[in-house]
Length: 138
Image 1 (cartoon, rainbow, N blue to C red):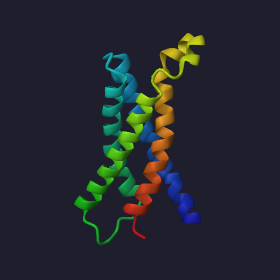
Image 2: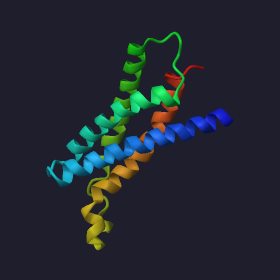
Image 3: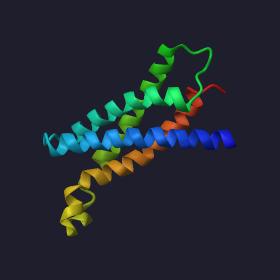
């Protein structure tokens, strides 16, 4: 149990950094380059996946002895693509559904970030559970 808690903490630290990269890049692309929020979210998510792979496999999950790095990376990418689909589905699915935020102009201006927070929580759960089952050494 102690090992699982330590692993969850490490996953959380890597995840927080990956999330900061994801959200920071999303905001940068949206606010500076005025990019479409869904396209910016896909780009920022993809960059954070590369960071997440490198640090998750180095500090969070124990590699399977019988799995090549290539296969490990492919599984990680496939799980991440599914996560991206979840991310994009939530970003698109919630678009236009947060009108109640228009009462506070400041909040409504960052409505896309609120959608991103919801997407991030769901994808975080998906990432931990799926990687623990499919990538980690048993």
